[in-house]
Length: 560
Image (cartoon, rainbow, N blue to C red; front, top):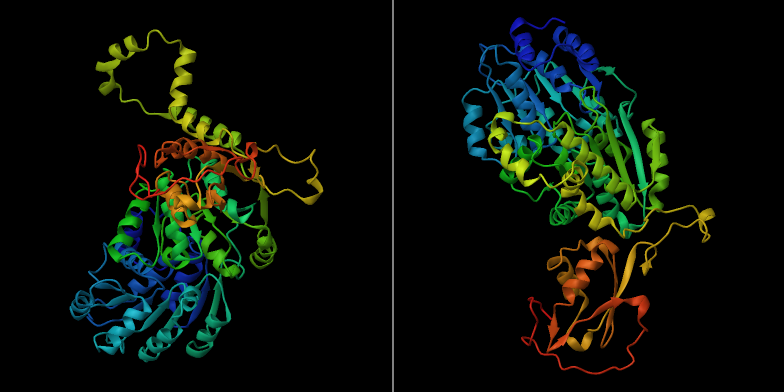
């Protein structure tokens, strides 16, 4: 393809032995000509090497000025691209590559540029700051790469991109890479590029062919419960969960962590050091789930993500394409899952038409189905477990002696039950939270529901405390989420009366909450909880109890 031996040695050391389709089409053009081009390529198709290798080869190592510029939408992608370029050129000339992005020391970046940067990889905002300070001299830049141009413009960087492209006045060519071609990207091309060649490995806006697209339909109050069931029904999941806002990302991550999931959040409120820490844990697979916003997830270059989960659909089909492209990378297959409410089902059809993909509606796993998946995952894990014979051999006689009174069948059951019992306890009374067509709305076709369930999703409970005891809705929710670690989506309606209250709760949490609440006392009166179906709307005797803060609160601490 025309690459020099030093670069071939560098990519061979990284384990690459054959070019991807986008590399096959882009590298010869970028090496042999100075024409502008637009490359339509999805994430995960190897586009960094497609522009990085020819860019490196066309740098003159004898000149210590900036000759190449790569613009990226996010700091994560900026750092990733700079690292990739350094790895590709490991056996080549000692080229000076500097990553320039917000959230890091600008003084350090200024020193690195003044030391003789030959390639700058930058986010638009920070590079404009350096231009204003007259630190970055771009008049000798020959080639400009716009990486993920559609996302860069979606994030509001058009003005900054305009300033930068005006500054590189002596450029020879612009290489624009984008997964989609919205009007804003086309406008950049028509303004700054001269008769650009268009290189495409797929039709515009099309999703990856090796990604399976699934969706689950549920009521809004059951979205978090559905997310947990989907995760639990895929025990080996290593995935990204996309949320629309940073607040959603923070709340979902906190709820997942409270419920024992190996998860963390990535969003714009995190300091750079915290973002780096979270990403490092995810790359090392010390995190099973990364809850992220679209902006924060740009630049996540992890090739073996098994699932992408959309906790609600994005506004634009192009954003869905970007999200789903985080899985199914480097020739692997992947699964993109969307959890939606009925009013968004038509949006699924729009995305199907725009991305030329097919979505399959799936049934939300029932409690028994989740438990079955978990059980056989445990069995498979035991079967595949590597045994350290030398280390365990000295302890084997004592192990055999301790287990000698247990039969083989009983021993298998007990080993499988170590983790299985936890899921069994949680999902034992779990209701069916699927939404069924209206034609199945008669009693004979409805799924079986647990006693006292509200709308098939919650169980209504009665508590013998109310307004006269100082109870209010906000404090009661904080008690449930804090003391009993109940996620907010699992809490339904709360109706507080003068001397009693009703509240709706997912059945999976009711046993623990009932047991916990009944350990409280208010002024010597024990709190009692019962199923609302067994209670009248009001107790037969409405007996007033004086309430005073600081009174006898029972064995547990409570604001009550």
